[in-house]
Length: 493
Ligand code: ADP
Ligand code: GLC
Image (cartoon, rainbow, N blue to C red; front, side, top):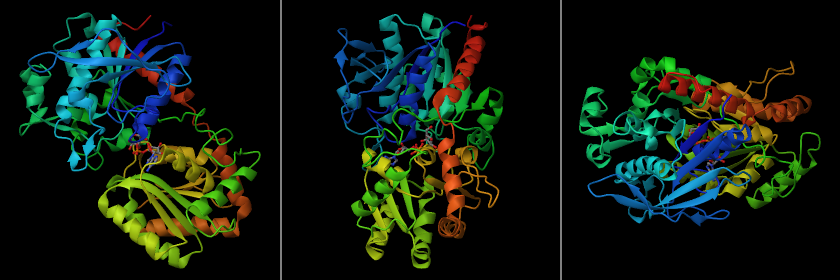
């Protein structure tokens, strides 16, 4: 079968710029696709905060981008995904991407996001034209890339690029991207399409909905989430569109980059370890306890959190349950996260009130995230919704048992412990309530103290899970071929 040309257009890519798991996915899947022989390239904005990892080379030609009344220009920087030959192109433009912010300013979503991401979508396509490289498939990620499929279906349909199929991945339906109607003129798109398909309502364009309407095929990051978003409860207002397009939607669970997330080789850890030799994990736990000013005691179970502090993640349930957890059980809890002020305040208070037993680092720190994944016994993820979730996968790989709510990708990746039957890779609860979380933490804690052999079994099973990208990459290749066939009328030979 012929190799495919695949363009990823994305607002984030690890290790250059990361807000959440989208960056991890876009930083890993292309490497796996390239290893399968496909020609994969990535386009991302060169925000002010972008980390210039590796060698960067500016392309000689400036890139003209057909947006707005007069043409806008970008400088294109080319580098590769570390550990691969996958080209990554960063579009530099001071007007749209000069600031450090990816999506939000300190006051909320940036008011010019519509223009910035229309520029990204058109700029990525302009780059293909400039390089005379026509992708078979453009893989779009979340609302920021929502205008790209409509560009290919309308203004660019009769150009060579118009043959390209689009695959649109929903990483998180809760962020849909509402833009003022001005974006239609700015992106030089036909108004009729926005009226006809009700993409424009009340003077605002829903960018996610636009992508969902226009993309050739749709994916999301777990099979359970693919079902949830077709229901009124999980659809965040877009369930009618997702039911309408249900035949074109597949759920493919995310993998993890096993080369960079490997406890035997991770250089961020004070000691390395593997399933066969866990001695180093005890060293990671002791170092973490010291780091957070907790009592250094290998016998006390240590629970960890690494998360955006957003309502979606259910950490208000943890804030509610925390006093009863810490008053009622001999445990320690550490948290790394940043986000909503109310949650930050709650955890700051708890760190003060339970000094020595609960500690929080409010910020973003990739190295500390790894040390928490490695040094804890349990990993807490009480998410209200979770499209896939990567942190529970990292936890399991690092021998840390996830305590999760049964939602989205958490259902698909964590097997609930069944006492005495040698089954399970973590602890799962159903209700998004503080008592349900409290009880399940209690269950994990009792297992730790009373059934250490069972706990060791859970840990071995968790560490033996195959969360590599290999399987999921095959699912994406199938979806790309399906999209190409739909777009061009014949399968890629
Ligand atoms: P989401 O994308 O919804 O935030 P995921 O579990 O898919 O959830 O991915 C989150 C990613 O962001 C993980 O790689 C996690 O380690 C990282 N992360 C989240 N919060 C922080 C933080 N405060 N510091 C460092 N890394 C973080
Ligand atoms: C989103 C989701 C998360 C998922 C990630 C990568 O940010 O919230 O569940 O793992 O995207 O697909």
